Length: 279
Ligand code: C2E
Ligand code: CA
Ligand code: CA
Ligand code: CA
Image (cartoon, rainbow, N blue to C red; front, top):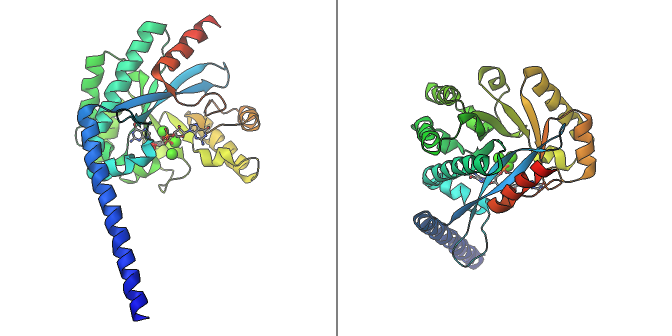
């Protein structure tokens, strides 16, 4: 038994070392990726249920090391957050999205808001509002076309500094959306206290309505909540005709999901906006 215990210990430390090495390597590679500007944004259309038209997009980061396949944000955002690299990466995301939003307006004549994901640590950055202000000034984008997606967990922090940031952002005129709505740990009180423009219903509720009718009740309740507070509601992860029909029937405002389109490279998103003018 003693021997086995020792073997387990060796296996355990070996696994730990491997995990640690992987982390350190990933962090090192991420720093390089920032230097080499190896990130790109894809844009996933948001569609208005009433008009059936594209009414915005969410910018989603991908990492493209030279000569390799795209790497999903799920593989590197957590470590970027833990190491603080998210502050640099996040600033790049906001600047790139604003620049693109402006370019799209000029090229297509269509004015659609672009949303970016802002992680909790990035949100707590002392100078976030100022950084955004500068980016808007440089890109000449009207602030109302930039939307920040934050999760409910970001809102758990209700320090005065945090509330100050929220209000500075509102004053600048950018929009604020609650991402993954319904999955966080904060109370709903923020809905009345904070200037929120949009609720994004998390895809876990949408994806399982066929199997679990309780999720229908949840979707409906969120839509009603949004309506009564004057906050637009968008459902994410919409994949099937069934989900689309149900969300339309309960008067949900917008949808995002593979049902309409997956996230697109910028050229394709631009083409989609151009095609929409003709149709
Ligand atoms: P999220 O903000 O909840 O973004 C939605 C994710 O769902 C995206 O995954 C999108 O591609 C995926 N999705 C869209 N439609 C469907 C659908 O119909 N079905 C399914 N199953 N999935 C769908 P993606 O691009 O891999 O991003 C994953 C997460 O990484 C994002 O979740 C977000 O939390 C984070 N992320 C992405 N880009 C950024 C960024 O620039 N900054 C930060 N801080 N986080 C980011
Ligand atoms: Ca999001
Ligand atoms: Ca989400
Ligand atoms: Ca999510």
